[in-house]
Image 1: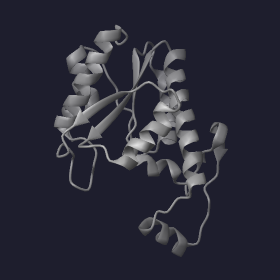
Image 2 (image 1 turned 60 degrees about the horizontal axis):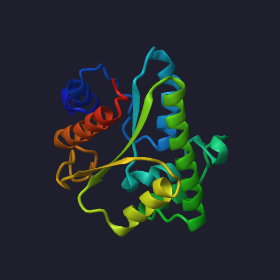
Image 3 (image 1 turned 120 degrees about the horizontal axis):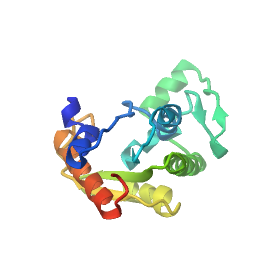
Image 4 (image 1 turned 90 degrees about the vertical axis):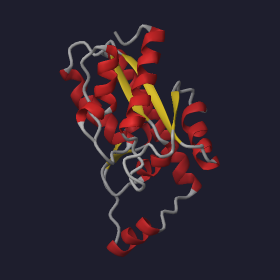
Length: 195
């Protein structure tokens, strides 16, 4: 996707503000938070931090084969596994309910910490939940457990199911990015928090 088609560029164009995209493809919520904590101090007067949460990508938050944040946002080393076990987990990504519950708690803590970083720097915090097509029961349950049960305010943005980069890459394409940018702009205008 070209820069001018991205969520950040389209939001900036609508609001008439300079934007920056700190997102990295395939990052989990904790990786995005760690990047934000490193990069946000470089911005003198951030007006808003926009985070995105997609239940369909929650599995990334459960990956422990890389350094990651654990309960209490404590730094955890990568868990080493035999190659055959790692390969099997790719094809059969079973996670126990206990592991999912820990992932939900850590994700919630990360999203709260992200909002706190924005506020400390004087900016607004906005959590966007793009919804590609109808929400299935598993996605709705996960969204409720992470966000609603955690008291995290968010803006759900419905998108046409076909507005993805490719069938296998479920990230929003330029049309989806435009819809998300419009929702961000509307939320900023409603709260006067993004100018």
